[in-house]
Image (cartoon, rainbow, N blue to C red; front, side):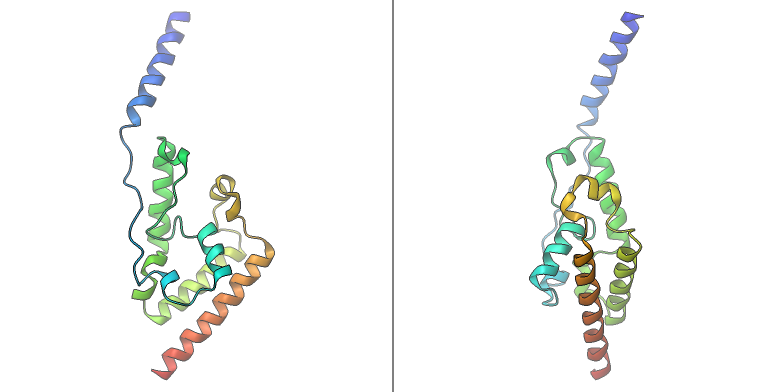
Length: 157
């Protein structure tokens, strides 16, 4: 029994070491003019909120922590990023039509209100991502103001 247990532990360690060689590609693209933060529509306070709670999974630039380099955590993080960017990629903001931008702002506000975003596992690993009620209210006010500006711009064009 002890021999079986030893072999089992050695096998687990070997598997753990081997899987470290199979890392997903990192999400480290260049910040372009299309990125939301480069569009001149985000003040400094909102930049902080977006960077802490949204941009790791919803842009082409992820800030990786040391434990993001360890498989299978790296695979899970990569899947979250892939799913997040498929839903909303704020690095592409400037390439969208104003109606799409307004829709994205509305969806973001709804998901924050319903506590769907940021994801609970993300908040557990990134305590700065937990939005206070004040930050949520700031976000709603910013999103509403930006939506109005986009709507006015559309009407005037």
